[in-house]
Length: 412
Image (cartoon, rainbow, N blue to C red; front, side):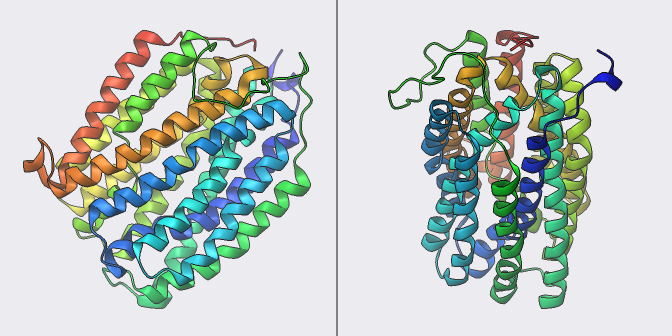
């Protein structure tokens, strides 16, 4: 079938993309300044930043598994995704009351619970809505919309920060509160659009896509290629600590709040531009090679952060970091769909996201401890977590090449 004869992409691609766009407008107004709020306003030590970020991801992981399983069992993805977005949006106003890092951790936990509820059903809904030969493009468009929202959110952040405190190096409490208030409208609009616009897609095959038993984090019964991919992704994630450490590293190298926000905006712009073409490329090449290429870029970027000495280095490295995100964001999700049967897709996404999420806590905790000087790399100081991340990414990429099939299940 020629490209001109291909059917239009399903409405769910555009609705979920619009939802993610608005959600990221809201989230990026807070997520990138939250490490600065913790460090600059609340005076939290770096290891605690790692705990906050790691705990936020890991505590939501079990819900990712359950929501994926439940969406398979009910054969209904949409309303679970809507509920997840609603939970995250409702948590944001509580930041106005945050006076210590424990409260921030609780709010981040609630926000990630929402993400845990929505992620697997949303990804499964998106995979259900397109043919396998266009799945990489669909996920690429979704991720491009997501990051376009991040660009707009960061632009709003820059406007608010400039009006509130000018070019100060450190973030102020009042500025953070203004950002919280501005973030609420797009967050709740995203929930409204998904609730009205998305449609569940009837699945072919047996009546029940998941058993009646409660789900476990288990790979039993899954294809070997999927098991290998999850294992390689877990190793990669162990070195992929929260981006909060990149933000703190940038501030350590002398970037004030406004230059840092401009840098993050440029990073997300690169991410946006690369996502859809990379997703389309993953429909033409073996998807694992697109993922491996992205992981190689990640290893190089983290090595660069480890040895960076100037603000210019930081800016250039963030731009390269956008290439990594754009390359892997759609390809990894499409590869998961390739490696499992359609009726087990929700469980597969839930398992994949759960394993990644549970690995996030030790990843960020290790990064925080290495930054503070613990462990065998104590002499490297703030560079240690980035050396560690580069090593994990390189090793994970080699294992992915060796263990995961090149063109798995394209007809699924």
